Image (tube, rainbow, N blue to C red; front, side):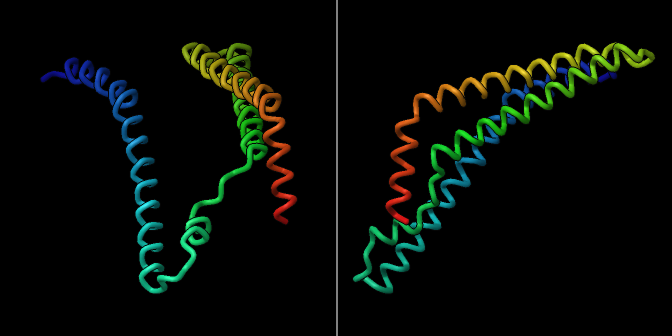
Length: 153
């Protein structure tokens, strides 16, 4: 095998690995983590039931489940990510402008920075739209959630 064949093979393997294998591995790790958490909770509950069969199982289940985030918290997280991606997009576009203005740098870096900055700005815009649409659509649910929390406290 000569150097050109290895380069062509690498040029094929790297995108396939990043585009196919990496997302599959990420999903597999997430599912595996959730299954392990569920199995651990199940073992804890079974051990508690074995030690004390008169225990209130519903209360134990409620306490052992992870706390759900509020709708408002989820919406705030969307807005935070929107702001962060907008800032990063503007930074990349600023770098592209600076590289074009100063000159003397590799001209191949300018389209890359513009591409990355544009993608980040597009993601930011989509998250901002999702935030505002969710805020309008989930207003009643968020209000009911807040009332429920104030009654519990």
